[in-house]
Image (cartoon, rainbow, N blue to C red; front, side, top):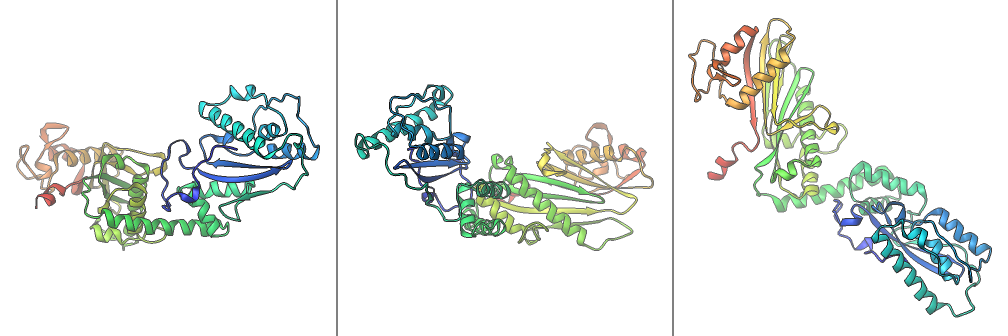
Length: 439
C-alpha cells in the first residue's frame, strides 16, 4: 500500500492554488485493485513532482492480470522489478509468497521514494500475515475492479487525465478544484471552466472585502501602443514582491487592453490629437475584453483572490494621434515578458505628443529621449520656446535644463529636430499616496 496522503476532499474549498511542498499543485486519489484474492489499496498522486513514480501504470495492471490468469506461484523464486509506477507488480508478487529482489529498482529511487517503497512492502507483508493463512496464497480470482472516492465520471483512463491537465493549464487553478469542477459539470470542459471562474470571482470578492483599506503603495505602470493609439495605466498592490508576479503583470496587461479597446471605440478627431484620463471607478467599470466575461473590476477581484494582497486599479491615460503627429514614450526600469506581448512595465512612464511636418527616421529615438526627460525632470506644463531658461526648480518643460545635457534647455534640444512638443503625460507608481496618507 502506498503512503497514506491526506484525502483531497479535506483540502480547503478555495479554487486558488496553494503550495504544499513536494506535492504542490497535485491531488491524491485512493484507488483499489483486486488480484489473486488480494485487495490492494493504493494512493496515486496526479500532477505530483514524483512524475511517473506516483501513479499506477496500465502496463503494471496488465501484468498483474496476467499473473492472476496464469495462477502464477512465486514461492522459491526471485524477481527483479525494474519499475512500474507505485510498484503494484512487486507488491502482488510479495503477496503471492515472494519477497522481491528490489535492488535494481532501489538504486534508481530518491530517498523519499525509497521510504515509500519500504513502507509499501512492509504494509503489504503485514496485510498478508494477517489475512492470508499459510497454504492459501492462490484464491479464486474475482474480476479486476477499480473505484474512486471522488466522483463517478473520473476514471484512470488517459483521456480523462488529459482533460484534467488541459483544464489546469488553461485556467491555472489547482488540480483539486479542476477535478471538482469536471465532476460537478459531468466532464464538460467548457462548463467546468465557467464554474471555476465563477467560484474564483466569488472568493476574490470575499477576499477583496477583507483586504479593503490596506495601503497599496507598490505596483506597476503599463505602457501599450497599437497603431496611432497609446495607453498608460497604473495598477497598485501592497508589496514589490507581488508586483513581480506574472499573475499581477497579467492583470496590468488586461487593464491596458481594456483601456485600449475603450479608446479605440471613441470617435476620432481627424484634425488633431485627442487625450483622455480614466479614474479608478471609471477604469474598474470597463469591460474585461472580448475573451473574458465581466468588467476589469471582476478581474481585479480574481487577482486579489489568487495573490492574497489588496490591489487597486488607480488610473489610466490614452492618447490618439492623426497623421502628422507622433507619440514618444518611455518606461523607466522597463520589463518585457514574452507572454505579455508588446506591453512594457516599470515604475515610471511618460508619453510625449509631438507634431512634425514630415516623417523622420529618428522619431522613435527622439520620442524616447523626450520621455526620459519627462520622467526625470517631472515638468508640470509644456511652456513655450520663448520662455526664459530656468534652473533645476523650473516646471515648464521646454525651459528646463535638458536631462541628458544640462548645458542647454529642452527647447534648445528640440528646436533643431524639426518637431514641436505639444503635450505630455507622466505617471509615477504610488504617486500621491504619501500626501493622501498625511491628510
